[in-house]
Length: 89
Length: 317
Image (cartoon, rainbow over all chains, first blue to last red):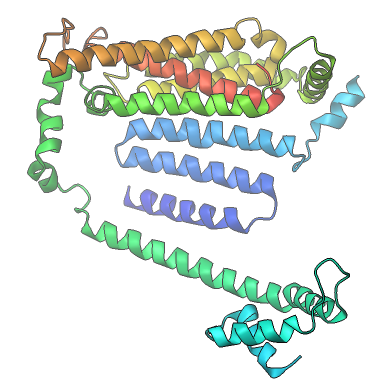
């Protein structure tokens, strides 16, 4: 359990550092989400399941979704689906 | 440029030396004899200063700012980290029971909390009962956040051609980019969405018995609704969720929360029995007002998450 805890904490640190060093916004959002999921596992290990559920749902789910849409609205990330849809039509 | 002016100039540029009154006076005197009135074209010397300052801010100034920025960033990060680490060194060891025993409030929550609320989950009973006023504020913060986003991003459907065009454009944009006929996503969503919804409802209803409660359950419900929306498009969700649904559900939930909390506070402060029993310990219908309050908070949170998504997505519900 100690080893898992340490590994998760190192992973969280690495993710947090990597978020600020990646140039690609999409990658940084996905790293942010990975950090949230690792954090929610840490909450479970700390016996705080209430927080774990909230962290997984808000940190990994809703926040990531909202950031994705914002980037899409700003045309900061390209989606491959657009061309695909046009071909179908 | 004279030597005197250089002094003031140096102060303006890097602030390395203190500026005293004589320097300003010297600078003003030196300038007033040469500078024409402001209405005429800039004096060659003045535009020279401007040029100089401009080029300075572009090469040396930018470099200075970069260095300053890096130094400040490192200083602030190290300072805040040191502060946080210093604070954690004061905290008790992990798993140490002594501070809990020493602290009367913690001991009260752990030992006697369930006698007052009738709920096994201490966290929910603190959030919704002992500290219920905080949760009321939090739900209102969410509601205000949605109102603000609505003010900024909502595009109302009106007959006004300008608005109609705007709305149609956003609609077209949305319909063009949403992957409507993604078979894998739809089949996956058919399988996952019911489970997510049932899990959310479970968390919501068992908030006073097991880990969970209004906020987490509501977020899971909202995420399930967003997943459904993502895979089946707006036409399906518009049938059961529109702006009126949002308005009615969240206002009713907030009103119910505020009224029931007001009732509890009023009776509690005046020492009147409130007539709400705690029920059988561990049963689903127990814990007094914890269950209805957690449902109210969950509805507000679920609506908030869903509406935030749709407003960000296309400026409408």
